[in-house]
Amino acid sequence: MPRAPKFLVGVVDVRGHMLPVVDLRRRAGVNAAARPAHIIAVRLGKRFIGAAVDEVCDVYAADANAVGDIAMLELDPQFVRCALRWGQRLVPLM
Image 1 (cartoon, rainbow, N blue to C red):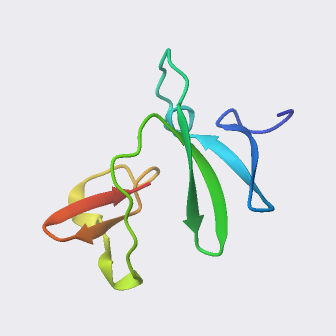
Image 2: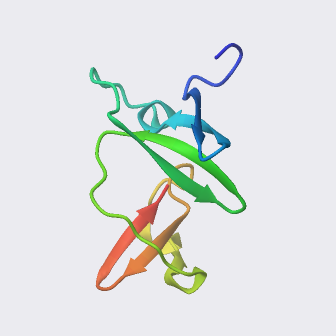
Image 3: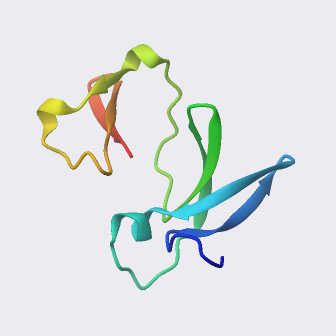
């Protein structure tokens, strides 16, 4: 797409809504030879985007009470801003 960030790889129509599609590897600055195989719809507040990913392992639905701060985890806040408490697991959210 002309004049778009390099990680914005296109748009997709999902049930009548146009979603921008981002390649998470490009966004994170990771080079890989293979192209992502799947696009997942992700809700960011009141907006949706498509995320190009290699694989989908699990799908989580949680309320705001399950999302916590990551200040103690020493992760790069540019990519991981919070984490989801899922049972005994802590899942970082990009």
